[in-house]
Image (cartoon, rainbow, N blue to C red; front, side):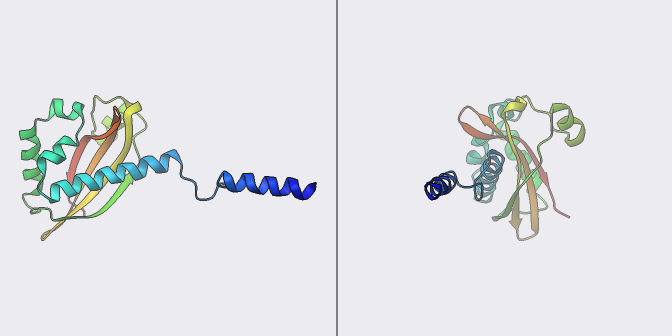
Length: 155
């Protein structure tokens, strides 16, 4: 009887994953946010500004027109050169609330904090070097969209 109980317990632990190798909700959000950053970076590297702009949220598109988006990308890449590839993606820590986002990160958004999915970045490469594109990824309906963009040259 004891062997049957031990065997049953072992089977249950194996069926549940035993705690090792399981993915948490936070890890899933991080991976999804990095995938969005990678896709956005690849669209910029391919010169697909329509595709990149389509990845932005309705909140972003209300404040940044397609023409302004294109001008922002052109300004950001003026010294950097045309991006040719995405060399890396990573995630950062989301601000705890809208006040912290505004005061510490100069990030102001209409997107409700409940929709915030991840803070991600893509490092774009060109012949002249690298540039980081940081972004706030939000959940909008069933889709992940970019709600805030920053362009920065790594040190």
